[in-house]
Image (tube, rainbow, N blue to C red; front, side, top):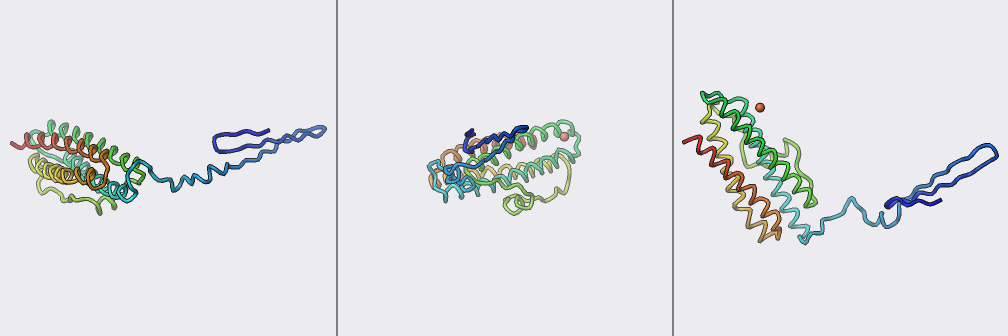
Length: 197
Ligand SMILES: [Fe+2]
């Protein structure tokens, strides 16, 4: 008896003697499946492999920046000491939640382009534009100003990359994707500035 399950063929052989029945099972993959060579399957989405690699690397740098900013925002959430502590604590919690979602979206965008997302702290520290310097003072304005500077640095980096992704690397999807991230950072930057006035 033959049985085809997706790309695998199973052959069942029943052998019977007077007292017992034996089942022999043979299994092999179809040749077409081998020819697919899934380990090296490349994205075929109308962007050259060279350009996909450039976009993926740039998105990994962005992923590193967002991860460092996420940690710095959590640091402020935990360690801020200020007469306005409770409001700041909640305000910063909301922000690192937004950053966590951005981080996940970037990593999955990289995967959808056929590349791997950086996922080590060592790798992030090598790629990031930001610095992990510890704030001298742990009051509200000190933390908020440092976070504002980082958000504005990411905004400027993204603004420069939006036309490059589209015009130089032919990836309008990723250009649109980082435009959305830029808008989110602009909104957070406005809120940080409003706290600092
Ligand atoms: Fe918390």
